[in-house]
Image (cartoon, rainbow, N blue to C red):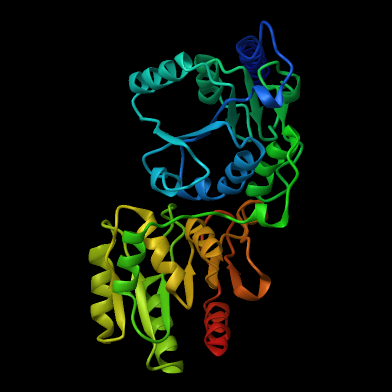
Length: 366
């Protein structure tokens, strides 16, 4: 009886949310989409670095399809540097974390009477819907969305165009589905990521790289339970230097991990193991990764950086097939190797032997 009452309350709560979502997504006077009337486009991408990287193919196609439109990106502080130098973008705004500051940004955008907002979420997300309603663009285009609270996303008036490319595809292809839904035709090179380091960033990378073979190792990802073990890092460094004594190994560090990486490098007592100085701007690291012979990393953001730079790499992923489908490398198959863990959401149980073999195969190619 108690469970029945709980389920009844839960059902009522879901119904109220479904009603509120339909109400919030109702357009009073939707207009037919007109290609020549799209004068301004805002891409909402205020999350992580990797998310911005996989969005660059879509932005590139939007630029080609709407060459005269003013293209803006609403970015986070974390991923702003990824897109600010992109020639396909006219303007980048940082979406602050403070609620009041966010409302102020959205109301300023509303005054600009934007033609189109691009919503990249795969689900019906309240904060994204509210942001769109506050901006009040003429049209909204969206990636494929899963239903929520029993609400069919395709039935909502808010979305004028919705991609048909669903979540069984890589995320960058899901986003490109928005462009094809708008009418754009895709070429082979439209699928590539686009990162644009400037001269200062390239110069910094050239100043830090060494002569000969250079290998980068990154132990960390944005998830605390998805990191490589320090003892495995030591073993990999020893393997690389045993197979090629004149190679150079760089341990990538952030300001938070710098002390740990220095201790790790010092513990090896090798003049061929270096700690790459951390930089606040990811584009410095992008420039450096482009110069590496190969990279080892559990971080999907750096996997995408390596793909953009055409740098071979070894990636360590959780076992989750869905996660890999979304974030799998956009690279030629002979330029990367992926090791999977035994766990769905962590790197627990990844095979040290398989990682060692993958490194050996990379070294043989050098």
